[in-house]
Length: 180
Length: 282
Image (tube, rainbow over all chains, first blue to last red; front, side):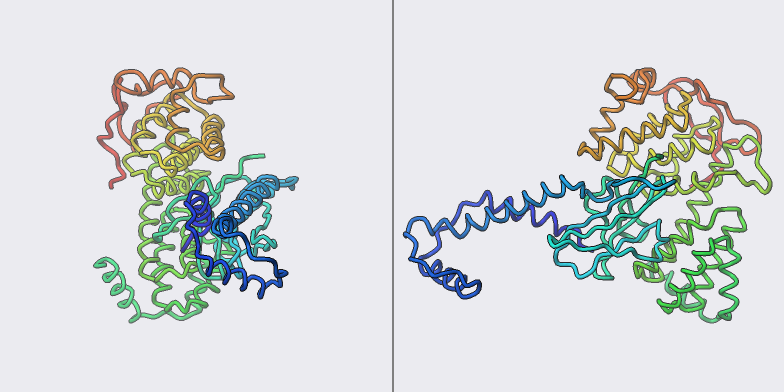
Protein backbone atom coordinates (compact mmCIF):
# COMPACT_ATOMS: atom_id res chain seq x y z
CA UNK A 1 0.00 0.00 0.00
CA UNK A 2 1.39 3.38 -0.95
CA UNK A 3 -0.56 6.50 -0.19
CA UNK A 4 2.27 8.96 -0.18
CA UNK A 5 2.49 9.86 -3.87
CA UNK A 6 0.26 12.93 -3.60
CA UNK A 7 2.10 14.26 -0.59
CA UNK A 8 5.42 13.54 -2.25
CA UNK A 9 4.47 15.69 -5.22
CA UNK A 10 3.68 18.59 -2.93
CA UNK A 11 6.92 18.08 -1.03
CA UNK A 12 8.91 18.09 -4.30
CA UNK A 13 7.20 21.27 -5.42
CA UNK A 14 7.87 22.94 -2.06
CA UNK A 15 11.49 21.80 -2.19
CA UNK A 16 11.94 23.15 -5.70
CA UNK A 17 10.36 26.44 -4.72
CA UNK A 18 12.75 26.76 -1.78
CA UNK A 19 15.85 25.43 -3.48
CA UNK A 20 18.64 27.79 -4.36
CA UNK A 21 19.14 27.25 -8.09
CA UNK A 22 22.46 25.79 -9.06
CA UNK A 23 23.96 27.40 -12.15
CA UNK A 24 24.04 24.84 -14.94
CA UNK A 25 26.96 24.87 -17.30
CA UNK A 26 26.47 26.50 -20.73
CA UNK A 27 27.06 23.06 -22.31
CA UNK A 28 24.23 21.57 -20.25
CA UNK A 29 21.87 24.38 -21.24
CA UNK A 30 22.75 23.93 -24.90
CA UNK A 31 22.14 20.18 -24.71
CA UNK A 32 18.76 20.62 -22.99
CA UNK A 33 17.67 23.21 -25.51
CA UNK A 34 18.77 21.00 -28.40
CA UNK A 35 16.83 18.03 -27.03
CA UNK A 36 13.74 20.13 -26.41
CA UNK A 37 13.85 21.44 -29.94
CA UNK A 38 14.24 17.92 -31.29
CA UNK A 39 11.35 16.55 -29.19
CA UNK A 40 8.68 19.17 -29.48
CA UNK A 41 9.76 20.98 -32.58
CA UNK A 42 10.45 24.25 -30.83
CA UNK A 43 11.68 26.72 -33.41
CA UNK A 44 15.36 27.28 -33.22
CA UNK A 45 16.26 30.58 -31.74
CA UNK A 46 19.32 32.50 -30.93
CA UNK A 47 21.46 31.34 -27.99
CA UNK A 48 20.43 32.93 -24.72
CA UNK A 49 22.58 35.44 -22.92
CA UNK A 50 24.88 33.67 -20.44
CA UNK A 51 23.49 35.16 -17.19
CA UNK A 52 19.78 34.37 -17.45
CA UNK A 53 19.68 30.82 -18.83
CA UNK A 54 21.50 29.55 -15.74
CA UNK A 55 18.40 30.29 -13.73
CA UNK A 56 15.97 29.37 -16.41
CA UNK A 57 15.83 25.60 -16.22
CA UNK A 58 15.33 25.04 -12.45
CA UNK A 59 13.21 28.15 -12.01
CA UNK A 60 10.99 27.28 -14.92
CA UNK A 61 10.57 23.77 -13.59
CA UNK A 62 9.67 25.06 -10.12
CA UNK A 63 7.30 27.62 -11.54
CA UNK A 64 5.62 25.04 -13.77
CA UNK A 65 5.17 22.58 -10.93
CA UNK A 66 3.91 25.30 -8.58
CA UNK A 67 1.54 26.62 -11.22
CA UNK A 68 0.24 23.14 -12.01
CA UNK A 69 -0.32 22.41 -8.32
CA UNK A 70 -1.97 25.78 -7.80
CA UNK A 71 -4.28 25.28 -10.75
CA UNK A 72 -5.02 21.73 -9.63
CA UNK A 73 -5.81 22.70 -6.05
CA UNK A 74 -7.87 25.67 -7.21
CA UNK A 75 -9.71 23.45 -9.65
CA UNK A 76 -10.42 20.86 -6.96
CA UNK A 77 -11.59 23.52 -4.52
CA UNK A 78 -13.83 25.09 -7.13
CA UNK A 79 -15.31 21.79 -8.25
CA UNK A 80 -15.68 20.38 -4.75
CA UNK A 81 -13.47 17.41 -5.52
CA UNK A 82 -12.53 16.64 -1.93
CA UNK A 83 -12.76 12.95 -1.53
CA UNK A 84 -15.85 11.66 0.19
CA UNK A 85 -17.57 15.01 -0.27
CA UNK A 86 -21.32 15.02 -0.51
CA UNK A 87 -22.39 16.36 -3.88
CA UNK A 88 -25.45 17.04 -5.95
CA UNK A 89 -29.11 16.58 -5.12
CA UNK A 90 -29.81 13.68 -2.76
CA UNK A 91 -32.10 10.83 -3.84
CA UNK A 92 -34.77 9.53 -1.48
CA UNK A 93 -33.07 8.08 1.58
CA UNK A 94 -29.59 8.45 0.15
CA UNK A 95 -27.11 11.18 -0.41
CA UNK A 96 -24.71 11.26 -3.34
CA UNK A 97 -21.12 11.19 -2.15
CA UNK A 98 -18.26 12.03 -4.47
CA UNK A 99 -15.04 10.08 -4.03
CA UNK A 100 -11.88 11.34 -5.70
CA UNK A 101 -8.26 10.34 -5.84
CA UNK A 102 -5.43 12.12 -7.62
CA UNK A 103 -3.35 9.31 -9.11
CA UNK A 104 -2.24 10.23 -12.63
CA UNK A 105 -0.04 7.17 -13.04
CA UNK A 106 -2.72 4.62 -12.14
CA UNK A 107 -4.17 2.43 -14.88
CA UNK A 108 -7.37 1.76 -12.92
CA UNK A 109 -8.87 2.92 -9.64
CA UNK A 110 -11.90 1.38 -7.94
CA UNK A 111 -13.77 1.96 -4.71
CA UNK A 112 -14.68 -0.76 -2.23
CA UNK A 113 -15.89 -0.85 1.34
CA UNK A 114 -18.77 -1.58 3.68
CA UNK A 115 -21.20 -0.30 1.07
CA UNK A 116 -20.13 -2.96 -1.41
CA UNK A 117 -19.81 -5.66 1.25
CA UNK A 118 -16.08 -5.62 0.36
CA UNK A 119 -17.13 -8.01 -2.39
CA UNK A 120 -17.42 -5.65 -5.32
CA UNK A 121 -15.55 -2.62 -6.52
CA UNK A 122 -17.00 0.52 -8.09
CA UNK A 123 -14.75 1.82 -10.90
CA UNK A 124 -13.69 5.46 -10.85
CA UNK A 125 -13.38 7.54 -14.01
CA UNK A 126 -10.19 9.37 -14.83
CA UNK A 127 -10.09 13.00 -15.88
CA UNK A 128 -7.42 14.30 -18.21
CA UNK A 129 -5.68 15.80 -15.18
CA UNK A 130 -5.33 12.37 -13.59
CA UNK A 131 -8.10 12.87 -11.05
CA UNK A 132 -10.15 9.72 -10.56
CA UNK A 133 -13.71 10.17 -9.31
CA UNK A 134 -17.08 8.54 -8.84
CA UNK A 135 -20.32 9.57 -7.16
CA UNK A 136 -22.09 6.94 -5.07
CA UNK A 137 -25.52 7.31 -3.41
CA UNK A 138 -25.18 6.30 0.25
CA UNK A 139 -27.63 6.07 3.12
CA UNK A 140 -26.82 7.96 6.33
CA UNK A 141 -24.34 6.05 8.45
CA UNK A 142 -20.67 5.41 8.91
CA UNK A 143 -18.67 3.51 6.31
CA UNK A 144 -15.15 2.15 6.05
CA UNK A 145 -13.68 2.10 2.57
CA UNK A 146 -10.53 2.00 0.48
CA UNK A 147 -9.42 2.64 -3.08
CA UNK A 148 -8.09 -0.24 -5.15
CA UNK A 149 -5.25 0.82 -7.44
CA UNK A 150 -4.69 -1.23 -10.58
CA UNK A 151 -6.84 -4.01 -9.14
CA UNK A 152 -4.29 -4.89 -6.47
CA UNK A 153 -3.15 -2.26 -3.97
CA UNK A 154 -5.66 -1.16 -1.32
CA UNK A 155 -5.13 2.47 -0.35
CA UNK A 156 -7.05 4.43 2.28
CA UNK A 157 -8.37 7.77 1.05
CA UNK A 158 -5.56 10.26 1.74
CA UNK A 159 -8.12 13.06 2.07
CA UNK A 160 -10.42 11.31 4.56
CA UNK A 161 -10.73 13.11 7.88
CA UNK A 162 -10.70 9.81 9.73
CA UNK A 163 -9.16 6.39 9.33
CA UNK A 164 -8.89 3.38 11.59
CA UNK A 165 -7.11 0.01 11.66
CA UNK A 166 -8.78 -2.61 9.47
CA UNK A 167 -7.91 -5.55 11.72
CA UNK A 168 -5.40 -6.92 9.21
CA UNK A 169 -2.51 -4.54 9.89
CA UNK A 170 -3.55 -1.74 7.54
CA UNK A 171 -6.07 1.10 7.71
CA UNK A 172 -9.42 1.96 6.16
CA UNK A 173 -10.74 5.44 5.55
CA UNK A 174 -13.91 6.30 7.46
CA UNK A 175 -16.78 8.27 5.99
CA UNK A 176 -19.76 9.55 7.96
CA UNK A 177 -22.91 10.38 6.00
CA UNK A 178 -25.09 12.40 8.36
CA UNK A 179 -28.82 11.90 8.64
CA UNK A 180 -30.56 14.01 5.99
CA UNK B 1 5.67 -14.93 14.35
CA UNK B 2 5.12 -17.71 16.85
CA UNK B 3 1.38 -17.03 16.92
CA UNK B 4 1.21 -17.00 13.15
CA UNK B 5 3.05 -20.33 13.01
CA UNK B 6 0.70 -21.87 15.56
CA UNK B 7 -2.30 -20.57 13.62
CA UNK B 8 -0.87 -22.05 10.43
CA UNK B 9 -0.34 -25.39 12.14
CA UNK B 10 -3.87 -25.31 13.51
CA UNK B 11 -5.26 -24.62 10.08
CA UNK B 12 -3.10 -27.34 8.56
CA UNK B 13 -4.40 -29.83 11.13
CA UNK B 14 -7.93 -29.13 9.98
CA UNK B 15 -7.15 -30.42 6.50
CA UNK B 16 -7.46 -33.94 7.89
CA UNK B 17 -11.22 -33.60 8.20
CA UNK B 18 -12.48 -32.06 4.99
CA UNK B 19 -16.23 -31.49 4.63
CA UNK B 20 -18.12 -31.83 1.35
CA UNK B 21 -18.66 -28.62 -0.69
CA UNK B 22 -22.46 -28.90 -0.40
CA UNK B 23 -22.10 -29.02 3.39
CA UNK B 24 -20.04 -25.82 3.28
CA UNK B 25 -22.60 -23.96 1.17
CA UNK B 26 -25.47 -24.79 3.49
CA UNK B 27 -23.30 -24.05 6.53
CA UNK B 28 -22.78 -20.43 5.50
CA UNK B 29 -26.50 -20.06 4.84
CA UNK B 30 -27.28 -21.27 8.35
CA UNK B 31 -24.84 -18.95 10.10
CA UNK B 32 -26.88 -15.75 10.13
CA UNK B 33 -25.08 -14.05 7.24
CA UNK B 34 -27.07 -12.00 4.76
CA UNK B 35 -27.92 -13.61 1.42
CA UNK B 36 -25.58 -11.26 -0.53
CA UNK B 37 -22.78 -12.11 1.90
CA UNK B 38 -23.31 -15.85 1.42
CA UNK B 39 -23.19 -15.41 -2.37
CA UNK B 40 -20.14 -13.16 -2.21
CA UNK B 41 -18.37 -15.52 0.18
CA UNK B 42 -18.95 -18.48 -2.12
CA UNK B 43 -17.37 -16.56 -4.97
CA UNK B 44 -14.48 -15.10 -2.96
CA UNK B 45 -13.55 -18.39 -1.30
CA UNK B 46 -13.60 -20.10 -4.68
CA UNK B 47 -11.47 -17.41 -6.33
CA UNK B 48 -8.90 -17.59 -3.55
CA UNK B 49 -8.91 -21.40 -3.59
CA UNK B 50 -9.26 -21.46 0.18
CA UNK B 51 -9.03 -25.09 1.35
CA UNK B 52 -12.33 -26.57 2.48
CA UNK B 53 -10.90 -27.27 5.92
CA UNK B 54 -10.00 -23.62 6.43
CA UNK B 55 -13.46 -22.60 5.24
CA UNK B 56 -14.93 -25.08 7.70
CA UNK B 57 -12.93 -23.52 10.53
CA UNK B 58 -14.10 -20.00 9.71
CA UNK B 59 -17.67 -21.17 9.28
CA UNK B 60 -17.55 -22.84 12.68
CA UNK B 61 -16.50 -19.54 14.26
CA UNK B 62 -19.40 -17.74 12.60
CA UNK B 63 -21.88 -20.45 13.58
CA UNK B 64 -20.69 -20.38 17.19
CA UNK B 65 -21.31 -16.63 17.33
CA UNK B 66 -24.70 -17.06 15.68
CA UNK B 67 -25.63 -19.60 18.34
CA UNK B 68 -24.77 -17.02 21.01
CA UNK B 69 -27.08 -14.47 19.42
CA UNK B 70 -24.28 -12.25 18.13
CA UNK B 71 -25.05 -10.57 14.78
CA UNK B 72 -22.71 -12.37 12.40
CA UNK B 73 -22.97 -10.04 9.41
CA UNK B 74 -20.06 -8.09 10.92
CA UNK B 75 -17.93 -11.22 10.85
CA UNK B 76 -19.03 -11.99 7.30
CA UNK B 77 -18.05 -8.48 6.24
CA UNK B 78 -14.61 -8.78 7.88
CA UNK B 79 -14.03 -12.15 6.22
CA UNK B 80 -14.98 -10.73 2.84
CA UNK B 81 -12.69 -7.75 3.45
CA UNK B 82 -9.77 -10.03 4.25
CA UNK B 83 -10.39 -12.15 1.17
CA UNK B 84 -10.71 -9.07 -1.05
CA UNK B 85 -7.43 -7.68 0.30
CA UNK B 86 -5.73 -11.01 -0.30
CA UNK B 87 -4.81 -11.28 3.38
CA UNK B 88 -3.07 -14.60 4.22
CA UNK B 89 -5.37 -17.17 5.81
CA UNK B 90 -3.58 -17.26 9.21
CA UNK B 91 -3.96 -13.48 9.51
CA UNK B 92 -7.64 -13.70 8.60
CA UNK B 93 -7.97 -16.38 11.23
CA UNK B 94 -6.42 -14.14 13.88
CA UNK B 95 -8.59 -11.20 12.86
CA UNK B 96 -11.76 -13.28 13.03
CA UNK B 97 -10.82 -14.61 16.46
CA UNK B 98 -10.20 -11.09 17.79
CA UNK B 99 -13.41 -9.83 16.22
CA UNK B 100 -15.43 -12.72 17.66
CA UNK B 101 -14.07 -12.11 21.16
CA UNK B 102 -14.72 -8.39 20.91
CA UNK B 103 -18.29 -8.92 19.72
CA UNK B 104 -19.04 -11.36 22.53
CA UNK B 105 -17.69 -8.82 25.02
CA UNK B 106 -19.72 -6.04 23.41
CA UNK B 107 -22.86 -8.12 23.54
CA UNK B 108 -22.36 -8.73 27.27
CA UNK B 109 -21.94 -5.02 27.81
CA UNK B 110 -25.13 -4.21 25.91
CA UNK B 111 -27.08 -6.94 27.72
CA UNK B 112 -25.86 -5.71 31.09
CA UNK B 113 -27.45 -2.34 30.35
CA UNK B 114 -30.75 -3.91 29.40
CA UNK B 115 -33.55 -3.57 31.96
CA UNK B 116 -34.91 -7.04 31.20
CA UNK B 117 -33.42 -9.36 28.62
CA UNK B 118 -35.60 -10.17 25.60
CA UNK B 119 -36.30 -13.67 24.34
CA UNK B 120 -33.02 -15.55 24.16
CA UNK B 121 -31.21 -12.56 25.64
CA UNK B 122 -31.70 -10.60 22.40
CA UNK B 123 -31.50 -6.82 22.61
CA UNK B 124 -33.38 -5.06 19.79
CA UNK B 125 -31.16 -2.65 17.91
CA UNK B 126 -28.01 -4.05 19.43
CA UNK B 127 -26.35 -4.74 16.06
CA UNK B 128 -25.38 -1.11 15.59
CA UNK B 129 -24.13 -0.84 19.16
CA UNK B 130 -21.97 -3.95 18.77
CA UNK B 131 -20.54 -2.63 15.50
CA UNK B 132 -19.67 0.73 17.04
CA UNK B 133 -18.17 -0.81 20.19
CA UNK B 134 -15.97 -3.04 18.05
CA UNK B 135 -14.95 -0.04 15.94
CA UNK B 136 -14.05 1.86 19.12
CA UNK B 137 -11.80 -1.02 20.20
CA UNK B 138 -10.08 -1.02 16.82
CA UNK B 139 -9.68 2.74 17.01
CA UNK B 140 -7.61 2.36 20.17
CA UNK B 141 -9.87 2.25 23.23
CA UNK B 142 -9.58 -0.70 25.58
CA UNK B 143 -12.47 -2.69 26.99
CA UNK B 144 -11.71 -1.20 30.40
CA UNK B 145 -11.91 2.31 28.89
CA UNK B 146 -15.34 1.60 27.45
CA UNK B 147 -16.59 -0.06 30.63
CA UNK B 148 -15.60 3.11 32.47
CA UNK B 149 -17.41 5.24 29.92
CA UNK B 150 -20.69 3.36 30.37
CA UNK B 151 -20.24 3.01 34.11
CA UNK B 152 -22.74 1.33 36.35
CA UNK B 153 -25.92 3.07 35.31
CA UNK B 154 -28.25 1.81 32.63
CA UNK B 155 -27.71 3.28 29.20
CA UNK B 156 -30.22 2.74 26.36
CA UNK B 157 -28.81 0.77 23.45
CA UNK B 158 -29.08 3.71 21.06
CA UNK B 159 -26.96 5.83 23.38
CA UNK B 160 -24.42 3.02 23.74
CA UNK B 161 -24.00 3.05 19.95
CA UNK B 162 -23.80 6.84 19.71
CA UNK B 163 -21.21 7.16 22.48
CA UNK B 164 -19.12 4.32 21.02
CA UNK B 165 -19.15 6.02 17.65
CA UNK B 166 -18.11 9.33 19.14
CA UNK B 167 -15.36 7.56 21.11
CA UNK B 168 -14.07 5.84 17.96
CA UNK B 169 -14.15 9.07 15.95
CA UNK B 170 -12.27 11.06 18.59
CA UNK B 171 -9.64 8.45 19.44
CA UNK B 172 -8.92 7.80 15.76
CA UNK B 173 -7.82 11.39 15.17
CA UNK B 174 -5.76 10.63 17.44
CA UNK B 175 -6.82 11.80 20.89
CA UNK B 176 -5.52 9.81 23.87
CA UNK B 177 -8.20 7.50 25.32
CA UNK B 178 -7.46 8.96 28.76
CA UNK B 179 -8.75 12.33 27.49
CA UNK B 180 -11.94 10.78 26.18
CA UNK B 181 -13.22 8.43 28.89
CA UNK B 182 -14.26 10.96 31.57
CA UNK B 183 -16.04 13.41 29.22
CA UNK B 184 -18.02 10.63 27.55
CA UNK B 185 -18.95 9.12 30.90
CA UNK B 186 -20.08 12.54 32.07
CA UNK B 187 -22.25 13.03 28.98
CA UNK B 188 -24.11 9.83 29.85
CA UNK B 189 -24.31 10.79 33.50
CA UNK B 190 -25.89 14.11 32.56
CA UNK B 191 -28.47 12.34 30.42
CA UNK B 192 -27.31 13.39 26.96
CA UNK B 193 -29.75 11.97 24.40
CA UNK B 194 -28.66 10.05 21.31
CA UNK B 195 -29.41 13.10 19.18
CA UNK B 196 -27.29 15.33 21.36
CA UNK B 197 -24.39 12.87 21.36
CA UNK B 198 -24.65 12.73 17.57
CA UNK B 199 -24.60 16.53 17.52
CA UNK B 200 -21.35 16.51 19.49
CA UNK B 201 -19.94 13.97 17.03
CA UNK B 202 -21.09 16.08 14.08
CA UNK B 203 -19.54 19.17 15.62
CA UNK B 204 -16.23 17.36 16.12
CA UNK B 205 -16.18 15.89 12.61
CA UNK B 206 -17.00 19.28 11.10
CA UNK B 207 -13.98 20.74 12.90
CA UNK B 208 -11.79 17.97 11.46
CA UNK B 209 -13.18 18.55 7.98
CA UNK B 210 -12.31 22.23 8.38
CA UNK B 211 -8.71 21.21 8.99
CA UNK B 212 -8.50 21.43 12.77
CA UNK B 213 -6.35 18.69 14.35
CA UNK B 214 -8.34 16.18 16.42
CA UNK B 215 -6.69 16.86 19.80
CA UNK B 216 -7.19 20.63 19.36
CA UNK B 217 -10.81 20.20 18.26
CA UNK B 218 -11.56 17.91 21.22
CA UNK B 219 -9.88 20.25 23.71
CA UNK B 220 -11.76 23.22 22.29
CA UNK B 221 -15.05 21.34 22.51
CA UNK B 222 -14.44 20.55 26.17
CA UNK B 223 -13.36 24.01 27.23
CA UNK B 224 -14.76 26.71 24.94
CA UNK B 225 -17.80 28.69 25.92
CA UNK B 226 -20.59 29.70 23.58
CA UNK B 227 -24.14 28.95 22.47
CA UNK B 228 -25.29 25.38 21.77
CA UNK B 229 -25.00 25.78 18.02
CA UNK B 230 -21.32 26.60 18.44
CA UNK B 231 -20.64 24.03 21.12
CA UNK B 232 -23.19 21.29 21.85
CA UNK B 233 -21.60 20.42 25.18
CA UNK B 234 -23.39 22.01 28.10
CA UNK B 235 -21.83 24.52 30.45
CA UNK B 236 -22.59 22.12 33.32
CA UNK B 237 -20.62 19.37 31.66
CA UNK B 238 -17.62 21.60 30.99
CA UNK B 239 -17.74 22.90 34.55
CA UNK B 240 -17.86 19.40 36.05
CA UNK B 241 -14.99 18.24 33.85
CA UNK B 242 -12.82 21.12 34.95
CA UNK B 243 -13.72 20.73 38.64
CA UNK B 244 -11.11 19.30 41.01
CA UNK B 245 -11.49 15.53 41.25
CA UNK B 246 -12.93 15.20 37.77
CA UNK B 247 -16.40 14.22 36.78
CA UNK B 248 -18.83 13.21 39.53
CA UNK B 249 -20.71 9.98 39.05
CA UNK B 250 -24.44 9.84 38.44
CA UNK B 251 -26.82 12.62 37.50
CA UNK B 252 -29.85 13.34 35.37
CA UNK B 253 -31.04 10.40 33.34
CA UNK B 254 -28.79 7.99 35.18
CA UNK B 255 -30.40 4.87 36.53
CA UNK B 256 -28.33 2.56 38.71
CA UNK B 257 -28.20 -1.02 37.50
CA UNK B 258 -28.84 -3.85 39.91
CA UNK B 259 -29.80 -7.48 40.14
CA UNK B 260 -28.50 -10.28 37.95
CA UNK B 261 -26.38 -9.10 35.06
CA UNK B 262 -25.48 -5.82 36.72
CA UNK B 263 -22.15 -4.50 35.59
CA UNK B 264 -21.04 -3.17 38.93
CA UNK B 265 -22.30 -0.89 41.61
CA UNK B 266 -22.79 2.85 41.65
CA UNK B 267 -19.65 4.60 42.69
CA UNK B 268 -19.31 7.46 45.12
CA UNK B 269 -19.07 11.10 44.20
CA UNK B 270 -15.88 12.32 42.65
CA UNK B 271 -13.75 10.63 40.06
CA UNK B 272 -14.55 7.64 37.94
CA UNK B 273 -16.44 4.77 39.54
CA UNK B 274 -14.67 1.54 40.30
CA UNK B 275 -15.77 -1.52 38.32
CA UNK B 276 -15.38 -4.24 40.93
CA UNK B 277 -17.70 -6.86 39.47
CA UNK B 278 -17.59 -6.51 35.74
CA UNK B 279 -18.69 -9.82 34.24
CA UNK B 280 -16.92 -9.25 30.97
CA UNK B 281 -13.35 -10.15 31.71
CA UNK B 282 -10.37 -9.03 29.67
